[in-house]
Length: 304
Image 1 (cartoon, helix red, strand yellow):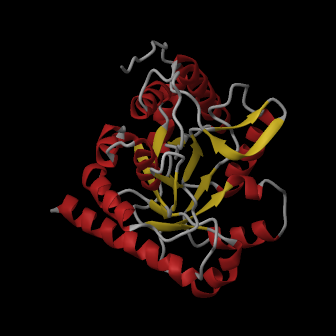
Image 2 (spheres, helix red, strand yellow):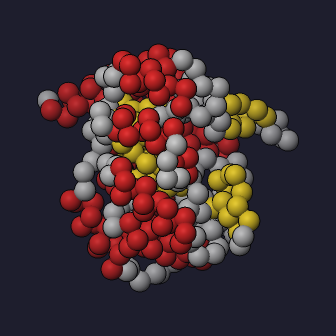
């Protein structure tokens, strides 16, 4: 049974809502993760694309080739910055030095969107190259809300929180994932980065209905969608186990779930993620164009 712990709302929630109302937003178009393999191709061709997204931690230095190219590409396209190292779900306090570097990066490029994961990746002085799950209970809810409030306070802008891909569940959880995310959104004023592939992966792994999960999420708070490919394995019991690999084309089932999502959320900026086995730029551009076609259909239906 889901129980919702009582936590008094903080002023940071109202601040985040005000910041969201005045902040620039990404266009409701298809976008791509920016990869070094494609820097020069992008500048040479300036493809018709809605936006690019970077991982913040790859740019937390003062100079170098990544900044050289990003500065040029940013002058032509809207930008989304996606963090993977804040450890929003971690037990300890946020790393203030990391938060300072993030603030400097955001001030430098003034992105239209900033997002982070509902996960943890550090414990004390140990930093793990992974996005690990946490139980959905009162202690985690308090911790995540406190961390997001601090991010809002330090950055002066709204964070979009991404739903995770999970492979195990905690017996200690007293809330469903969708209820947990809904409470975080309600109490902090953060937005939702809806990773449709993560919904499909997690629901397959835990025997749930992906469409029901989409409908249970706070879609009114969604500011962006992520799409990606997955790898398939089997668990110890012989059941299907999907891995959020970001190393394959987007599966047909995920495209279908994306269409289902747009019918309920309306058009949202949509990123194609590919972090492993990077193909030619034209391959990723074709996936972004496929998302764009679905977005245009959604826009036409909204206008009708």
